[in-house]
Length: 607
Image (tube, rainbow, N blue to C red):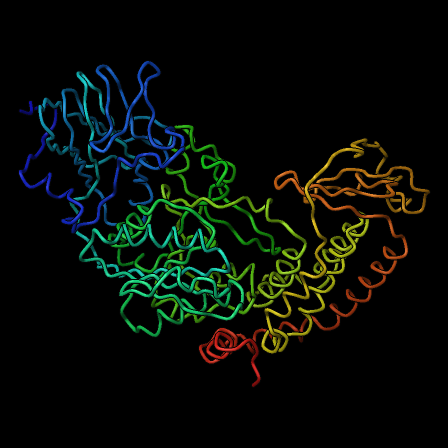
């Protein structure tokens, strides 16, 4: 028996069957996600301190007297985003539960104040279904929705989801593309999760394309009607993602959207449901919007790295909503209520419209880094990072090596040249000189040389991208990366010398004076030149990976790098207009099927 509470509701006999895994036909927003493995419960719900929940196969068990609110990051519904991009206005909460108590649907504004609330009492001896819906339209300032339950007796919560009275606007056929290079464990796990998710849907057209750049998935994953493993040359992430795009475009109009994902992430498969649900309800004006997911850290899944990013006029990247602690309710509300407008969405989780991809072409052959930025600028579509859609990725600081700086520098130069964000050659020369001399003073001579090489390779123009064997070139770049070994802080000096800035400038950071200190510890990524003042040797430590490498002062090499940077700067000033024109003239070919058809079939373009 169910007693009627404070709002209008509908009880229908077939509701329980709608949750049968083999009978699900309509997508919805799952509002009762449960933690995976050792995840923090605060990412999903918040409760009073006196009681604890317990999960089982039957659902979530609540002891009598407990209050629970599903207002954590993964269960909070971002109504403001849906209001701006979709037709969704009239929410309907459906809950399956057992016991006695009350269910509440609450709407909040961006400040966390209640704008609307409805409640339904229940008294059920067996699992039963209840629906809640606001009796009036939600106020304009509504930002988020969540539901909660107060248990008057021991209760079991089985399922809960949000739907809307507004009809679906279009059918979404989702293709997924993963580019991988020797990440077998991650890829096979994610492929299994995707397969398991869609096995419960009979009317969602989907397919997973995996570009195997390392050739290591043979025997681990087999082609199926819904998954294709493509053996691909090692043309980097750019080549792998280009291959997945090629496969999708060759299917003509079979798919409406393509979701690109990294090979070294973990994620809840429900994020795919949420993307499809969002896209299927988008208005006509936003049917081609790019949808992405935030990134958190594998070892700190509650910490948000970024939710979308901007590419500034000076060519630097600015992550949005970085470093948020998603365990905090107020932070989650702000994160969902006020997503900032992004220029691009990184390809660790980025879903794009296939008609837009067909028009924009394939990625530029950057190998790694900046291909997603350049492509987003070329695509020209609005980008929204959906709150509650998130992947977990290893911290970039753990994976740092100087070769990444080469690709970031070179590809940023190309992107700025292509999209008119160059701000003139003189500014580029000044930035180059500062980067080279900073690395030289910090005794990172190979890093400084790689920065110079990035500028010189950029000045070779589009022909360099077209003719270079990317795998062989990458091998040469990696040969300049110092070997890192496990850190051992014995004999390491952490002494800091406070020297006036004018003294460091006058003596070239102590290079013109005798060296005094040895084995000075500096942060591999965040060291400043003052750390190396009058140092004989430096120990470059990566505190995130627990590794290090050692360098020694070589004054002659510093002076060589100085004069090489002067010459490179002079050449850049002279050649920049012609180089920029080269990339703009050849970009149609470099992003085309003719180029990538050859590149992904062999490692060099012999045209």
